[in-house]
Image 1 (cartoon, rainbow, N blue to C red):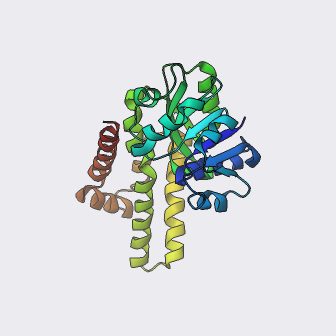
Image 2 (cartoon, helix red, strand yellow):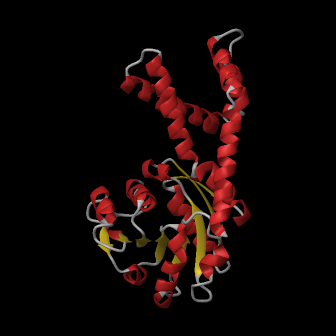
Length: 267
């Protein structure tokens, strides 16, 4: 299977690197396009020997699976550009936040197989969280293809398109929330006397370990939290402070703001 990326930004780089690391695709089977060779420099530096071009139509001609990884505001323009060369063999995968399946299908030839995917950047290290929805003409084999690709770089779930905006809020934007949490935890450690490098390492590993416990033990996060909170202990004192400062509410609001912005982009 050859895979072509239209767009060579961070998400394309993360997915391409993840596909290579998981051996779902070799570098000689990956292609990427961007408006100029200068804008291709980042993906060339990250992925040695990836095939690159400034011709989006060339990507469609040379590959069966096309991942359109451009900004939502230029997606329609790019789809109109490649529409004349789309073949029946092509599967078009859009990772643009907010842009709904009817708007993706509209500029393309009737019958084009489309899948909308919402991945996130931890795909780069095989720990992504992705959800996808099938378009009007997508077939079961297309779901299998998307599952194969996205499961190779992390968790992959099929959802109704009506839930994709919520996925954007939770996992699409979620890594940024967690990076802020890691940075803040490390800042707290530094204020308490830890060296910066050690505080960052401990903070990052703590979030990694907490997520792994939720995924593998299967207990509710509240139960796992209660197990750490000894009566009168250090953790319950810290949790009290988080509650007083609106920690839960801030995260819920962040998810809803991201979700709403995704809906706005779709409009």
